[in-house]
Length: 329
Image 1: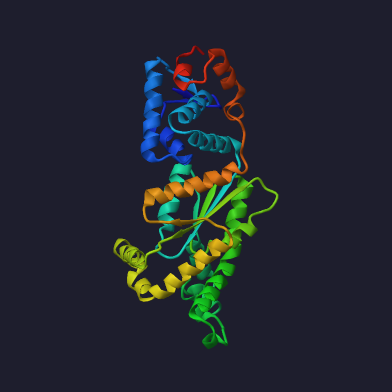
Image 2: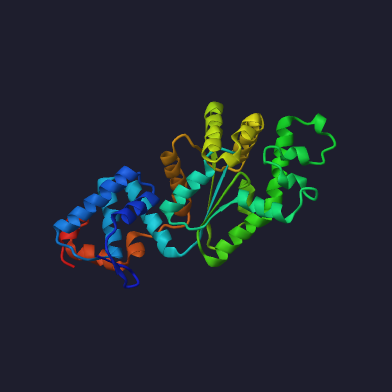
């Protein structure tokens, strides 16, 4: 049994413990190994109940001694964040077909984030409120929005510049709605993931100032044209309403928009994650989140897990997690 800080008791959950380790950046296979190792030693020592503080401290020591000091530090940072009550604002940008929704869903599951907001959905709501004749650029695709701009000198501009201008015009229209999502998350102190092609790095400037919110921003990319085309075809098979043919017919514009998004990410020093393998990409996003958290959270173990665990270790006269398990309470 595991006794929480609020006094509630629940059965030890391997799955929950493994997800917690993954949330600190550990790969699934390694997380399963560490969880099994701890669980087996607790059973062998005859432990029938343990507090979350002691379990957290044992996990920290186990990671430090069985995996690496760096893995233990990431776990410590994640544990401190979980106890801090501070909101996490994670923003995921990327062109069509780069896997934003899939990665966002997987990351949300591991980080226990219940709010995921897509900018595509925000745009659909705005489209219902504003007729195409009043704001035609809003009703176009992000990579074709330039065609609806009242540009007088389009023949003197490059295709790349026109696509960038059309995209930025949509970003500006959606910025207020995105800002409202971030503002609400800050006010309620809850984590949120905002994902979509319109999650431009400039949104970071719209995060309310003077709050304790922690922000993280990544851009997803698929760097091989054939792979991105294959993904777009797959979207059409899995969800026919997404009309893969429309995307494939305008692939050059999508590719150009991705190039612009990557250049903007470089300009704003936003990490670019090449999404070739889903599990690897999810871990990279989580590691980036942990890196941002580490800039704000640096408490020692006894501060995170409580002074009682330090006294427990001092009384036992050991820093070995294996020996500490066997020591009396």
